[in-house]
Amino acid sequence: MEFQFIIVEPDFQPHIALVRLYRPKELNALNLQLMLELKQALSALDENESVRCIIITGNEQAFAAGADIKQMESRTPVDLLKIDQFETWDQIRKTKKPIIAAVSGFCLGGGCELAMTCDMIIASESAKFGQPEIKLGIMPGAGGTQRLTRAVGKALAMEMVLTGRFLSAEGAQKAGLVNKVVPDEVYLDEAVKLAGEIALMSPIAVRLAKESVLKTYECSLQEGLHFERKNFYLCFASEDQKEGMKAFVEKRKPDFKGY
Ligand code: CAA
Image 1 (cartoon, rainbow, N blue to C red):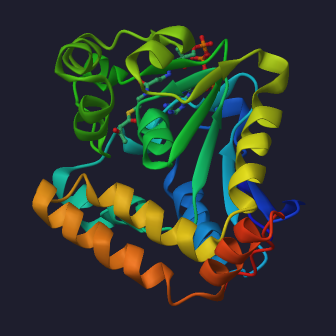
Image 2: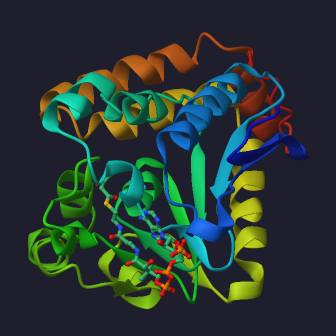
Image 3: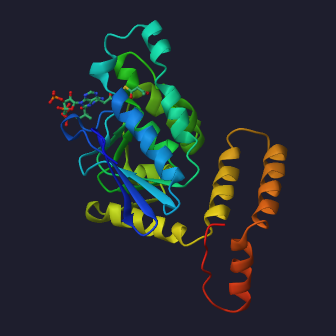
């Protein structure tokens, strides 16, 4: 897959695809074209049977320093309405396969929102998270006020959103925003390790489980439990369920095929 602002490796590791945000001079600022490319790439990887887990990363200096301010500077509300750039973000959220953000350096504004749209975050020790939009006279617009609050709680989210203060990798882990913090040299390896573990599971069960966890954001506990139960029953329609349980009984590792 050839793109201008991202690099996609569908076969980065067995069953693991890597998407690298690639605007290094601009600290991977997310312009419209990059987000469109990301949407297209994720949609293709979602369709690709050999891919079971996706990693999105940037470089050591920046995961992404936010939406492209230069591109936004002269926009009017009507422009924004017409472009409706967050529609692209909604599509990314709909990716069925698990996505891990491997974050180093700046992870700000739309960059932080993109990382939070992913399912898990592995951070390097030098990662810095923040929603500094308030310093530009605006506010987060791609889920920052909602996902950050759910992840770290009201007090810290309010502080970050209203002051633009950054949160260190260590702070982000303490607050529950990231899964793990590791030395800078190994943050991508750590993400690959996590992806590799998920890739060994039944892709059908993984898909249904991801869908069920995300449902928490959208409904009452009662509805969520009902949804979970249906997905649990649905797992039993797969060959992978039979293989998983047979392997347990036979005391061997399962070989999940994805059907
Ligand atoms: N948009 C466009 N360009 C950006 C950018 C952004 N979000 N962030 C950095 N850049 C560019 C800089 O303009 C600079 O380009 P030039 O060399 O052409 O001047 C280059 O990247 C390097 O940046 P700096 O020289 O500023 O690097 P630094 O190390 O001194 O500072 C930084 C790094 C603290 C991250 C600083 O660049 C910064 O504050 N960036 C903006 C962060 C921000 O406000 N993000 C929120 C954007 S709005 C948003 O995301 C809305 C939303 O909810 C979707």
